[in-house]
Image (cartoon, one colour):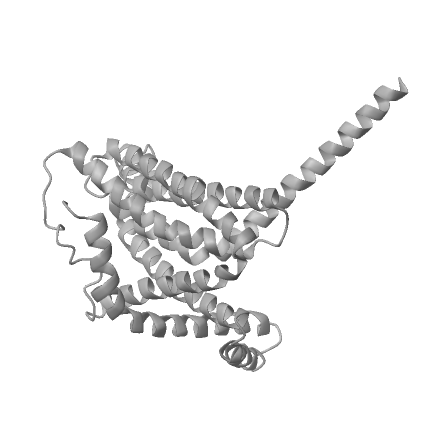
Length: 323
């Protein structure tokens, strides 16, 4: 009997350790995922365009295809690469992270430049005017395009998240990164599904609501969705510039070049301490975010010619040949 009691005590202790490990994984995953906010918001803002033009009955199946592709990108390709880097080439993480930050700056600045009429953005794709009569083929092509775009954004998310995970053993890092991948994918594509179907929900409420208030709410949803999508794009662009700029500043500090980071920190500190103590922390944080965002915009604008004249043509030649 005493042996059985001892065994049960051991099992209980193991269960407590396992539960604590699960809590640690979830906690670390949440913190790491929050660092990738810019790429996550951009992912949610970009994806709805890939389901435009489909019948309502095909929107969710297309989103599900993209979701499965996104999980495959993160878990099958990017997770092993990230773990190999973390364990065998940790020195490469900061430069890769800065490269990713530069990409976020480029994407955000390109959106700003396009609005101002200074850039063609991604609208000059040679196959953009092509019409496809086969809906099934169009669906496959749109999903494939979304998955390719997702690969870039997922690489950003996974790299940023990996850098934010505290040093631990291989399996803890793997579990945390896998949790980040699943959590972010569910959040992003769950949000995309809600956004895409919100028009249908509003229309159904406007036409079939039993109460006048319900019908009014439905009409408000339908009228408000275009503005909401524009707001989401603006927030996503600002987040990309902010996160991209902050990543580059942090990467420079990691590589021993801390002057720029100190200047931004000291400037934000001065602005924060110029207001009342009650607002000090919020104003300091916001000031730093604005400075990082302005830096990101400047870097992105400098990168636009490189992206449009060199990188984009190579990308299209590789991935869109025969399209």
